Image (cartoon, rainbow, N blue to C red; front, side, top):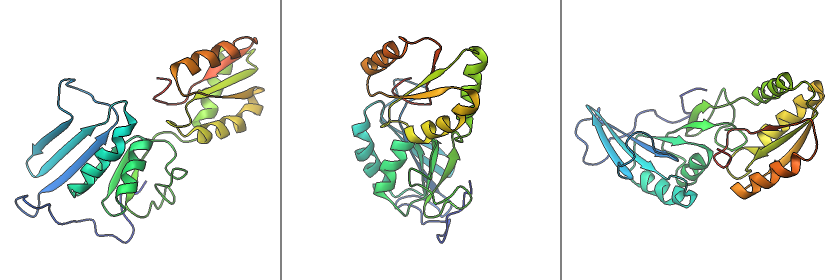
Length: 215
């Protein structure tokens, strides 16, 4: 995807208090923390002429909105958004500050970009998975178990682009002579129930797309 933003200048004024016109500020809102587990929720880092602010929401999705507001209020030059729900929270707060997303599978369906070739507005980023990869996941299952007839699609619609992956799976399934079974879940108990119910019929398999709930 292009890193250019349609109709907007790439350079923005340095935030108040920063020294020198070349000083730039990068904010990062993440769902998970990596590295030092004891680090504070707000981490600042200076690298010559770049100031980096990081915020961790952890598994508490209620923190996305307030942390997004907090980061946008600092008026950074760019924000890095990790996961679809984090990117959505930031989009609601700003249509001006450049936002780069990662770990997002359906940026068009999520309303972040107009197209992969021409993102438009203030969003751009890296596509995590193209929908066509789902067909390869199904083919791997069929190779592991040639007698495969049914595949349960297990994921949380609130934490993954459920329809994006499911529709791709349903399109690929006939060529492999398998039937997709939609199994939306929201909690660990739901996952257990879905698997137990599905396992009652032989020749079945599970397909779990990238999803924080099932992980």
